[in-house]
Length: 408
Image (tube, rainbow, N blue to C red; front, side, top):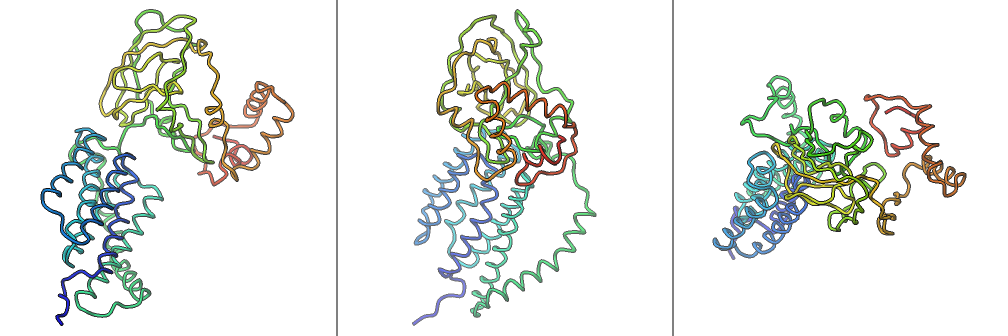
């Protein structure tokens, strides 16, 4: 009975390698458009399962590559840049498992997978990305150790000993990494002069959370330019409608996922109609603003059920839009029961002091909504201070703002 080749990949080693590659892919997928990330994830899983028994035929691999390129073009367009490059990296990593046969293939896949969390740092440096990247790197190092023992046909040591060895490797490399961080200069602009999301200009988002919009407040560059054709609205009628955020998870306000798929309520025109054009500065985002209320979506954009406008592609260059709006007073339709439930729904277990105060005011004011609004505004005007330097909020950030900091 012949012994297995030292270069053959066991089932256990293959599982560890695929798990490490998947962990490396996750932080990058979280930075890509949702549809594209789902496509790449599904292709990665299917490719790993199908190629478990045999190598995929060359025509099939070519078809998968072309399909991935088409999906990236569909979601991101033909613009070169960091976002597109990261999407290509994720797509190639998803297809790389089709070549996994030997220990050499496993090492190649692991080395390639380690680029994925590093690429995710080019798009986001938040704690979630950091945690996932550290987990992916540790798992890859652990898998490389197991591959080395498999190649030498040595027994795999206990997990504790393997982790101890990885800790020694990190301890040896950490001083060099710190020296590189402090001694090597960092470029303030992209190396090839291509606009990137990591240095993108401030712009509106479909989410809002504490401290996220400070860059907008501190930035005095023009965001858009407006030219009216005909009557110009009075100052009190120049309300600009941007993203309408009706969902709240305890920390983050966001747009309703269903608003983009439903037509907006009809607008009864009971006054002048304004005809104008807007020149938007590039923001690398898709959210648009329009004079309240826009009557229809211009070509290349969509009008949601909340009358907010969204471009179908990211605003990577100066763009011009021709719009028509009617006075806000002409909007006479009431919210549907579904919209009202969404707007009033709050998560359980967050900001208990605020919830208690709201129930107290409702009990005292009854159905008089205007009285509650006046009471809240009077309270804020009497007690609160304006500042751009507030500490990061905790889990109950609304409670901290209203009762502790009272500044923002």
